[in-house]
Length: 400
DNA sequence: TCTGGGGTCCTAGGACCC
DNA sequence: TCTGGGGTCCTAGGACCC
Image (cartoon, rainbow, N blue to C red; front, side):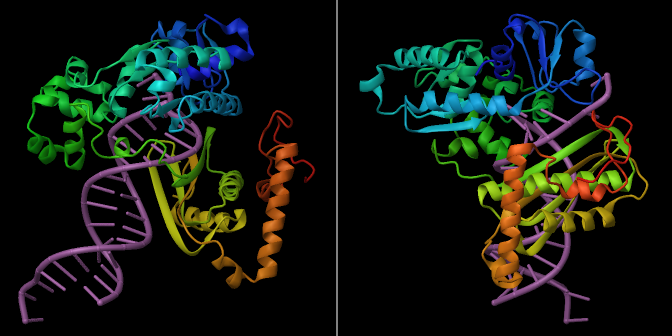
C-alpha cells in the first residue's frame, strides 16, 4: 500500500489530502515518524526520523497521532480484496502482501491485466492506492513494487531479473540495511550488479550464511530465509512484546513497577487472545544514555497470566537495574511457547480455572471500558499516580 | 538529528548430555 | 591427566523490516 498510515488518516480527515502530513505524534514528544505523506517527503521527512527533526525540516507539516486500530481495520479490508484474487495470500506486514497467482490465468487473464484489475478493485473497495510488482520470485516482486511506487504496476519478466536488479543500489535489496551497505561500500560494491559479479565463496567467507543468501538475492532468487518459504505458509507469532518509552526518564520505583505491570497485562492479554503460553520471559531496560540491556529467564511451566509474568519481570528488574539510574524505556517480551495444560495439575484445577475465569472477565471489561478499566498496575501505584490528562498534577486519587 | 514499537532472523558462547 | 564430537537449550546482543 502507498503511504498507508497517511492514506488511512486522510480517509478519516479529507482535509489532510495533498498536504504535508506526519503520522507518529506531536513534534514535542519523544518518538519517530511512522509515515510521511509524499508532500512531507519533499522536505526530506521520512519514516524512522525523530519527530523533532521532522519538525525542523517541515514546521508547517500537520502532525497526527497514529491509530493502530484504523490501520488494522483497513489491513483486513486489503486482505479481503486480495483473497478474492487468489487463495494463496500472505500478509507480510500490515500493508504488504504476497499473492501466488499460479494457475489463475484463465480467471484473471495475463499478469498485467490481472494486476490492473487488482489495482482498480483495491481503489474501489478501500479508496486506497497500492503498487504492484509482478515477478517469478517474491524478492523481485517486492523490489518491483517498490520501484513502481506510487500507484504503479511493474512486471519483471522471467529471465530478466538480473538485468532489472543490476543498476539498483545494494540498499534496495531487502535485508541490506545501513550496516551491510557500509560494509559493501567499503569493498567497492555499490550496485546489485557489482554484487552479482562476485564469487559466492567470497561472499560466504566474508558475511557467513547471510553472504550466501546475498549472492542469490543479487540474481533475483528467494535464496534462504523467509523469502524461501511458500506463500501462505506463515504460522502464528513466535514472540509477543510490549514496550514503553517515558516522555521523561525516571528512577521512581513505583512508576517503573506500575509500568512493568501494565506491560505484563498487555502481553498477558495477547497471549490469551492467541491461546499461547510462554516459557521465556524477557525484560528490556534502556537507560538515559540509550545503553540497553535485555535479561531473560525461562520458567518450568509456561504461563499466560499477568501476575506470573509480573513476578518474573519484577525479579529480573530488581536484580539487573543499576539502582537509582534513570530509565528511558522498559519492555516485556515473551517467547518459547509451551503446553498450558500442564499448569492445571500443578496449580490445582480449581485455582487455575478461577484465574482463567478472572482473566477472561477482565479482558471483557477492557473491551468495553478501555485498557485501564481493570488493572494490576493501578493497584500497584498506591499513593503514586501517573500524571494523566484527567489528573495533571499526578495527585493521589480514589482507587479504582 | 537525538533516537518508537512490534516483530524476525542470525551469531556466539556456555551449560549440559550422551 | 592435559582435554573429542555431536546435539540441544538458554541467554545476550545486534541487524533489519514496516
